[in-house]
Image (cartoon, rainbow, N blue to C red):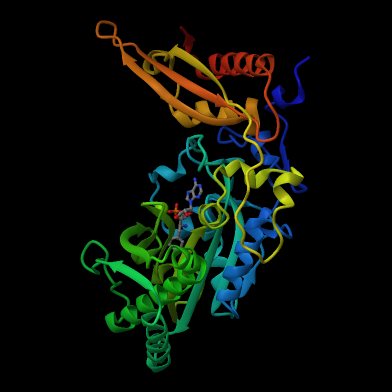
Length: 425
Ligand code: FA5
Ligand code: MG
């Protein structure tokens, strides 16, 4: 009898999540492994680094309404349609997102709750929540992570208050060691909206930039100060279907640019959908893990899910401190090479690495640290393609025995052959 983690539920049984039942259909691809993360709510767990970070951001945005969501399951309409995602947007694909069925899915971002939030009579909101994406496997990717969405809207009309606030924020930031690189231009590829007075849209954009620069200064300022360096951040142009102009922000950290958030001026159409067409404003969405990994010096994203007291006892609510890794247990590598099926002949979905990684995760759970492609070969005569992957197994809290890893690897092989039609070499 296989250990429980290897068993899959019968594919006809409806899915039950947080007490609600959803029928399956041809879109269903949410697995028991991923659904077992629902309800953990690390961002609300007292003392957890993600909870501390959430608290600091909530303090920075004082007076903003905290929107709590009941469940990470939203409609496809909320996650995509209502925000203006085109029908053929790659994010909608089953290889990238987890569907409960054709109508419901695990949200891929906290933006799924923007439209319903604007509907209230408030003007400033924060949403912290778990989000889900099918992805590759390495130390900075996990299929569940946490985002915070911030939104602020104003009645359209008199600009004097907004201008005064912007002047005050600009003066405060000018005194700080923040070095902002911003070559973004608002132009044809990233325009102010036709429905906006450009002067008004420019003030909203300034407010967004000042508020986020202030947050980044609060979060990363002391890290830079300790090194005696200025804090460098960079604004770049971006595209999101429900904002224009749109931007992403990167922070200079460990000699590299780290993307921490996306943002922009909310499409007037989105506010009209909420019945708030008389208002205008901005929205942003940031990734909590990315920032927490830097602030707490946590090198492996799986650690956030650890229930080991050697992890949890190092932290307390409200305090940022450097994580001291307990001994790192040795990794065990296993390679797997196989021929891909001929998708055209066999009528299969085209090969997608995320499908492979999903199976590895279902079998090995948090014992898998990294999956990397080590060879990609196409036979010159037959045109047949073969791939080789290296799976790196490592437990965060014990030494893995070879037999355990062999058993895992054999089960991965069996399941990928069955599910993906590949042929082991
Ligand atoms: C979004 O999710 C947009 N909803 C952000 C947004 C909100 C734009 C409001 C405009 C208005 P993006 O996919 O770039 O955008 O993700 C936002 C942030 O989430 C990233 O900058 C990053 O910090 C974090 N993030 C994204 N993917 C991952 C991942 N796989 N693991 C950890 N963090 C991630
Ligand atoms: Mg991005």
